Image (cartoon, rainbow, N blue to C red; front, side, top):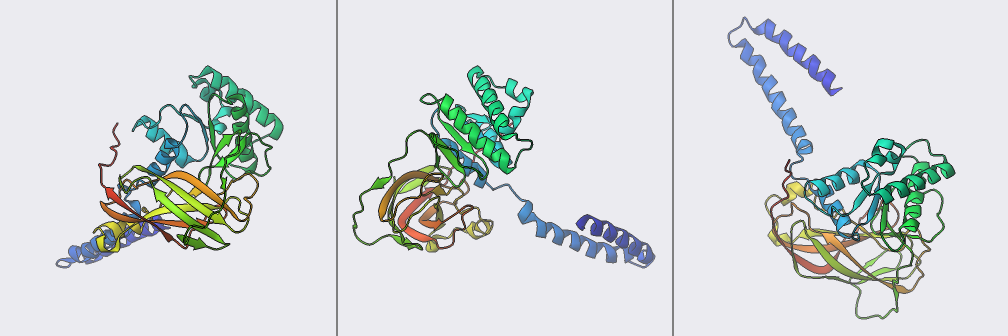
Amino acid sequence: MGIVLALFGGVGFSAVTRLVSPLRGGRYVVALPALVICVLLLRANWDRSDLSNVWLYRDRWAAVLAQMDEHAIFLAEFDVPMFATDYLQHVEGVRPDITLLRPQDLWHEWYVSLMADRELRESSQESWEEVNAKLAIVQSNTPEFWQGTALLSSYLAQRYEGSRSVYALHGPVTDPIAPPPYFIGLSEDLVRLDFDLPRLLIPFEQDGQPVAEFSGGLQLLSFETARPGADTGELVAFRARWHTAAPLSGEMFGVRLVPRVEQLPAGWERLSKKGRFTQGFPVVYGLRGLVGSSAGTVYEQQGHFIVPSNAPMGDYDVEVAFAPGYPPEYQNWCSSGNTLSVQSSPLPSNGP
């Protein structure tokens, strides 16, 4: 519709120009409003078109790759994680030891032949044939295909048990897959396939007031960062302790950085309106894909969050939010009691 209106607008201005051109200054009378309209349209669309300082996806998938074991196999679907991982590995040289595997391309001989690792080439091809024989998948990006991707990751984990770790990223799974391996949630959509359940339950000991309380009787008992400062684009380790008053399964919490009110950088508000400073790497709390956590217990969780690459230098409050389900809709953000001092470092250069 915008293109059609622009064409008719151009034809209209041309017709008006021919009518008023004999008059003195007639052409300028038409050209001036036309120029104003073009400038206004450019201004209105510039913010959504300017991607020169958007590092959200780069940062998120840098954090994903950073937490994987050496020489891991990463089964990924969807364009953003695929392209971001390709960029990180081939442009910035981040975690080239990890093998990125796209299940839907296993249907094509040309893709399979590109795998330099003969063992992985044979294992993935044989496992994918077994998956298709069981599920009769005919199209990608469907519930049947996502089920197949999860099943493929399970088969590969069984083949590589003890030698290589397997991580998977796929859409919602329709039917449960009998463990082991167990699908352990690491982020809102990333799972690691393990053969042992994580030991997360520890005795509950009330030690002072909780840092924050959420609906459903969930309490954040403590949240600690490894150090008080970090550079932009850097991973920061944390340890959180949660007390559950009701069974939980698949719940998630997010971490974000908010600049101190008295130190608001000049350009922060413009950037934050685009959501670039909300943490894009929420960590799963609970055991997604497993039984729900029992009530009245304490979970201790360790993980990482990443400082946005384009964060201005200054002090930031570390805030935490909790949300059930997927995708999570975080609403009530609470202070974790931590302040992080951020030092700006040069943004990665996208070289040839």
